[in-house]
Amino acid sequence: MGNLTYKEQFIKFMVDSEILRFGEFTLKSGRLSPYFINTGNYKTGSQISALGGFYAECIKENNIEGDAIFGPAYKGIPLAITTAVTLYNKYGIDLNYSFDRKEVKDHGEGGMIIGYKFSSDDRLIFVDDVITSGKALRESMEKIKGMCDAVVTDMVISVDRMEVGKGGVKSAVQEVEEEFGIKVHSVVTMDDIISAIENGVVDGGEHLEAMKEYRKTYGV
Image 1 (cartoon, one colour):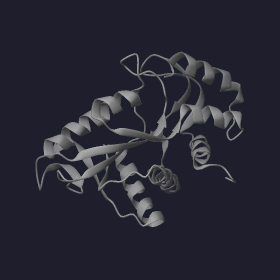
Image 2 (cartoon, rainbow, N blue to C red):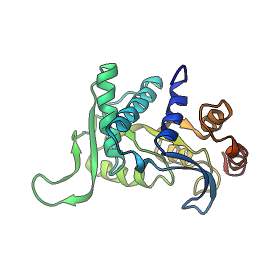
Image 3 (spheres, rainbow, N blue to C red):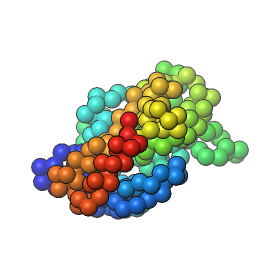
Image 4 (tube, rainbow, N blue to C red):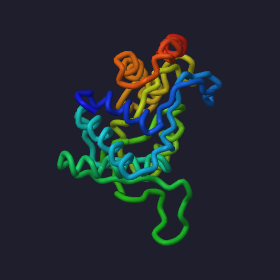
């Protein structure tokens, strides 16, 4: 990938993996978007390994510290694991990891959390794919607070769409930061994607004006 920044590498990686696509897509919000991100399309060992590298680099670059990485079921589970593995293999940082259950287990040892059983003294780094409404975070926070007073200090996501959220004023990221007091870090933003098209990192010049118009219309 030459001398590209890790953000440019990530955008190219998403396009090559058919995670990031350009065209016309109707979102759940009803908005017609010129791009779509489907992180459910990651399916190979090389892809999930590379993804962990980008999340680990984001954590390292932003000096994010914590006692454990937490990923919400289901998409956050492989994210938490691959990020923890890469942090150890690449940087020698050995963090705990844990994730929640969608359903309550009523046999065996039970419990809502798998992996590291955090306590009130622990700081958690929350990893997820994107923030649309903050629903996954909200549900997980209820489970976390139902266990103890562990603090979620930071959240890492793949892409910040930088568009107005359900409140109609702030972005979904800004709403989460305000509601939970969590600092949200994205590997890349919509502005980064626009720049990558402009700089020829990825194809999509024919969608550039639509991307800019969407950013202008719904952007924060």
